[in-house]
Length: 218
Ligand code: SF4
Image 1 (cartoon, rainbow, N blue to C red):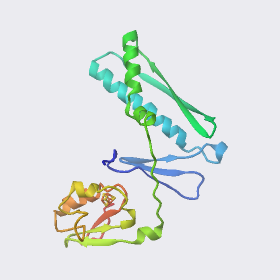
Image 2: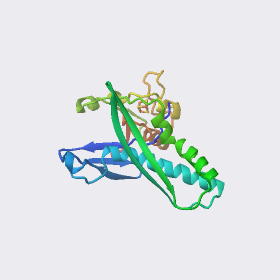
Image 3: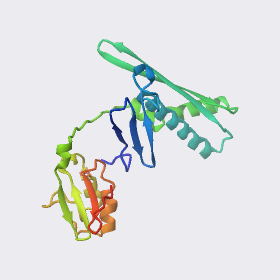
Image 4: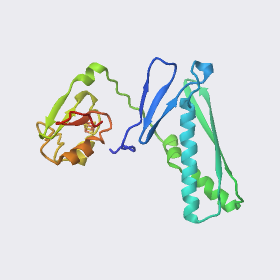
C-alpha cells in the first residue's frame, strides 16, 4: 500500500467557530463554515473543498490532454455543484460539473474531452468504491514512545500512531524491519537516509531529532 501523498493533509481546529487550519505539502489555508451554519465564512467549507477537488482535477486533466494533442484551446472553466436525495435510508449524492471551453472546438473534440474529463483521477475515486478508515488517538496515546539512536540522530517511535502498512520498512529495510527485535536498527543507515525516510511516515508515528541540538525535524 502506497499513500498518494508523501505528506498527509493535516488539519486542526480550536475553539474558534469553525476555523480549521489545513496544512498541505507547500502551505496552509483556512476552511470554515458559512455564517448560516455558525461559521465566519473565512475559507471554503467541506462541500466546497470536495467540489473544488473535482473541478481542479477536471481542469488539470483536460489541460494535460489538450497540450499533449497540441490543440489550440486556451481557457477552460468548470462549474461544480451537488445535491443530495434519499431513497429509503440510502443517501444519494449527485455531483454535477459543467465544463465550458472558451475556444471553438469541433464536435469530435467535445466528445473526446467529455470522455477525458469523466476519467480524471478524482472522478474515478468518486465513482468507484471508497472507504474511509478512522483511527482515533488521545494525547495520552501519543505520549507512549520508544527511542533508538545511532549516536547522531534519535528516532522516536510512537506505537499508538503506527497503524499503517510498513512503508518505512519498504523504504529503508536496513533500519525498519517489522520481523526483527527491536524492529528499528538506528545503525542500519546514514543519518541523512534515516531522516529522509522518517519524514515520509504518514501518521507522525516516527520523528527524529539530532542528538546535539535535540531539535525536532517533524
Ligand atoms: S512507523 Fe510510520 S511508516 Fe512505519 S509502519 Fe508505522 S505508520 Fe507506517
